[in-house]
Length: 149
Image (cartoon, rainbow, N blue to C red; front, side, top):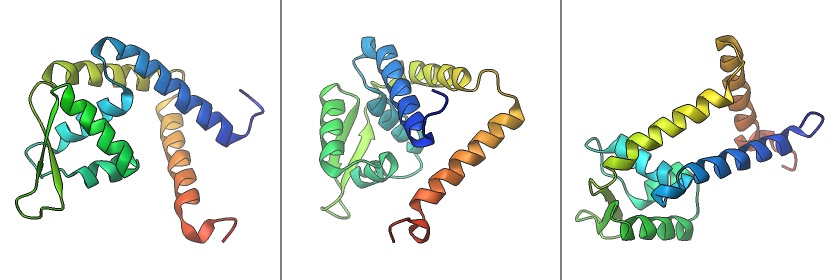
């Protein structure tokens, strides 16, 4: 991959991670994105209500994509959705408890992938990489930095 544009390298790495994680979870009949939603809901469980909009913002996905993913997770018995009693425009999402058997597998696989990604890097190099990635993200999300502004 050396010699390629940084953006292309990041895209290839992201797609490869996604493919490998999806292959790891094939037996569970879940995709990496579905796993991310379950982890997000688990992290917030008991602390705050989680709306469909919260998931859209966290996942950075469109409304129709999130609706479809939530529908699939509901059909698999992992989540329950209901209209908020406080605001009927808000759809709340909660875990059913059936995700318990997969969450440990999700965390284990995620940790293994993280270890694999940074294999051969020192702690300082890992900290540098995180800082570089954060800076790159800031560079492309800060409207004042856009090339075509």
